[in-house]
Length: 462
Ligand code: ADQ
Image 1 (spheres, rainbow, N blue to C red):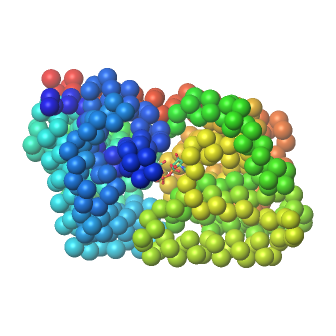
Image 2 (tube, rainbow, N blue to C red):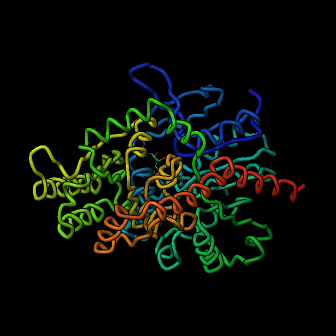
Image 3 (cartoon, rainbow, N blue to C red):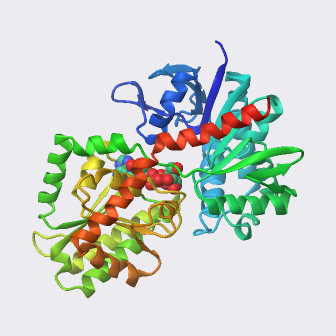
């Protein structure tokens, strides 16, 4: 098989095995749609894990994208994925909201799996090809690919925040991680703050030298780039305008009693601030008489990392809170909070966005948060209000949202009241500005921005 000039590597392949149809199905998502044209044009390959333990498969084509599976066994899924990725790096990079755990027996499998990904990339990529590596699971990969294919171009995109040096410095393998990343040609982050944080860590722990737009390290230049990820704005708006979605949105509204609808949509993750949001809803119902009968709060929680005890406990806590609030404020035929613990197909999700008068996105810390941008993309009639945490990467661009501190329950409760009573004119003006932001800079603009920087790195090295 001829080598690929362009390889994308991420923890997961963009396909899932469906038991029902006994075939691979494309995973929905903006990243895949943004990369599809580039993968097709450059005859690219996607390297990633299938999501199933021990499954050892040869490369195959799906939906015109070459899939190159990487095998992980059950022990590696425990130590590399649930351990180092999601119990060390995830909490550490999200401001240590949970205490990160540092275990040598997790670090070694992380190294091993990163080596396996790098080997898979080198196997499939031409020696002068381009590899675009994604996220915190694969931070050692740039250096490992560079070792074997020194003439390749390597880009890395971090989907989550890069933490301040006071936190990153705790990582026992901080130098190894930095050396892994700094071997890229372009390192891209969701926010300028992450660029600053990475620069400080590389200067302190690797003696890298800041230069314009990047760093010099060991005689090499690495470009640091601020590249906030975005959504397929046009595609989402098209769906939002479709008659089926409109009919579904109307039926959601009528099933919720034709009250004002406040929506929350998140993976059930402790970074997302779901409990605080619910506590704010409770305070709102306490403080503003009739609020519980005038508005319905709808929380959709997507199952995630269900094997991890912390996530199981969080689910119980959230569900207890929902029960308590409904117990306090509900009446026969009127449930203040509707809660769904499941993943939805995109058209149903968009119908929920269309049904919502107010969208609440209140993470304690979030690389970007695509839900906020998706909601805005669906508001073609300029209706709707976005309540957004200052601590989501999206807040940098979506300044016209009603910004909140998710730890300030009183502020959050007061903002719910304000959002529901925002004068039409102000609401329309804010939404128009938000919409021009997501229209101008969509997921295709994002991938162009990242890949142009990588192509420029290729020219510089000629
Ligand atoms: P996530 O933490 O997963 O991503 P987010 O940016 O909100 O967070 O993306 C979630 C995606 O899942 C959205 O595209 C949304 O449509 C989808 N989704 C949400 N609820 C759903 C539901 N009930 N059913 C089906 N789909 C649902 C990480 C980082 C983020 C960063 C992204 C992309 O943590 O900060 O924005 O990567 O870089």
